[in-house]
Length: 453
Image 1 (cartoon, helix red, strand yellow):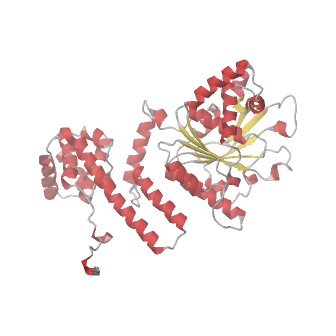
Image 2 (cartoon, rainbow, N blue to C red; image 1 turned 180 degrees about the horizontal axis):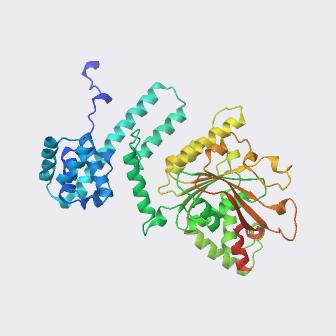
């Protein structure tokens, strides 16, 4: 017998879905903190003000965190005064509710469990909200399919990474975030929160290291050694325990690793290419391989890769600390754009957004125009950025690599190199002397080279 349409179960409308939250858990977190303000140390590991579903609970928790950061005493009287000052509560209703919060707590010892419940409910609400937006975008079909998929993946990724997009924030909330960051970079564990050291002390001093969400452009003319310099930085960062993703559009993974083995083991790169290794070279090679194999470094040599593809691959690497891309002009936008300047500009804009979204520094290599060739001195400058467009604008830091002996060799400049900080949103610009050791495809600071001699 054929079924009747009306007999089928009608799927639930998205508008009918009730957003999950736990009133008891929210009240118990706030009540526990009122009874024992030291609970905030534990609660802040799980919660931010926006995690609370009820607006009055968000206001109460915000006030508690503000008082806590200022080392103010927290109890019913002082908290009520803070809430009255902020226009959240009046005397009568506010006092009654705060007393109720303190009385409702089953056990202060379980505040961590209450906080986890509030957190989980927030994640579920975020998933529901993101799902509605994804379904709406897919149903409208106004954007490119890849763009819709990338946006959908980004929304889920943001929830996993505990990133919220609640719109405008009052300066009070931002100050609390800034205060928390300053507290972290001033603590005994400050190395966890400061920029990643590049292995070049003078460069780190100028730039404060490789800072999260920064787009760092490393530009040079061909054969200056920019790939080697980027690989040296990536190797130094990985050796310090950080997790690095290296996208090489020019060389294969094996070629890059061969260079790293040469640098690490101080084995001439020519020997690794020819296979003419002496017995002691094999010993050094084994030691270098053992050291590098312990590094959290990942390679991808896909040709013509796009920014969304890089972004998608990076999202799948948990705890990523640094992304290196070699190099910009070999990337593809994935779209038909006749104007190359516009295409490169779109890619650099996408890379800057990617650095912010993934909250990692991104080092992108770039070719320079031939303008340096016709100029006396040949030192690169910002105007030499090839197909510049918005490259200079999007980059937080622009580094140029320059070797004078490439143009004119002399006894004085033999193997000397310079890293020019041409743009630096975090501080000063200037020149950093380096030494180039072509046999081992590595750069070292000029001072370190002199001390080793």
